[in-house]
Image 1 (cartoon, rainbow, N blue to C red):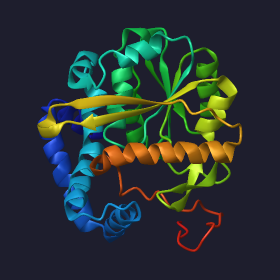
Image 2 (cartoon, rainbow, N blue to C red; image 1 turned 180 degrees about the vertical axis):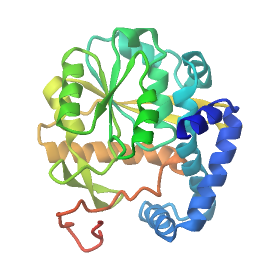
Image 3 (cartoon, rainbow, N blue to C red; image 1 turned 180 degrees about the horizontal axis):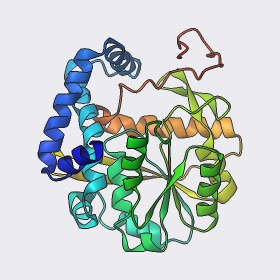
Image 4 (cartoon, rainbow, N blue to C red; image 1 turned 60 degrees about the horizontal axis):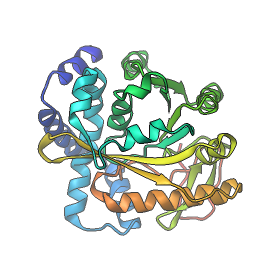
Length: 291
C-alpha cells in the first residue's frame, strides 16, 4: 500500500507534490505540540524569530517529507531536467578530478534531490556515490527506501559495515555522501557548538576526510518557487583539517551554519538537533535528555 502511494505521488507534477507537502507540514505543526515547540525554539536559538520565516519553514518541512517519493520513483531524465546547477557544470568538473569526494548534504532544501541528481551524471557510472542512511524499522518502509538506489547511487547502512563501505568508496577514488547534521548514537560524535548551543555532532566526516584525503563539499539543493524544480549549489570546504577531530568537527559546524544562513527558510528546524543520545549527559543544562 505504501509503495502504491509513493508511486501515485510520483505521477503528479512536482508543483502538486510541493503543494500537498506544504499542507502536510502545517498539519504536522498543528497536531504536534512537541514538534511545534522544537521548531520554534530552534529558530529562536539560531536568531530567526521572524513569523514570516517560521511560516515558510513549516511549509518547506512538509515539502521535504513528501518530495522524496517523487524523486525516488521518477526516471533519471526527469531528475536531470528538474535540477539546475547554480554554476553550470560544477558537479561534472568536481567528478573529473581524481581526488575522492565527500559530499555533505545537510537538511537544507532537498538533500534527496542532490543525491539523485548526482546519479544522473555520466561520470557517476564509473564513480558512484555511496550514501549513508539509517534503515527504518518497518519492513514496508525499508522496501520503499531501497528504491533510492539506482545506477550511480549506492546505499550504506548507518553502522560499522556502512562506515567501511564509505571508506572503501573513498579509497577507490569515488564519492561518499553523509547528512552531517544528523544526531549520531552515543560514542559516534562529540559536543560541538551549533548556533551558540552544544549539539552532539557526528565526527565521521572529519575522520573520513582525514583518513582518505577526500575533498569536502557541501551540497545544497534549494527548492525553486511554484514547483519549478531545484537549484544545486556546491560549496567546497577547503579549510585544512588540523587532525584534531573535535576541532575539525566544530569547523564543519561553523561552515554549515554559514550555509544555513544563506537559505534559512528551507532548513529542517523541526528536527531535534539538540537531543541527547540515551546514556549521555549534556554539557550544560540547556539540552534536555531524550528517550
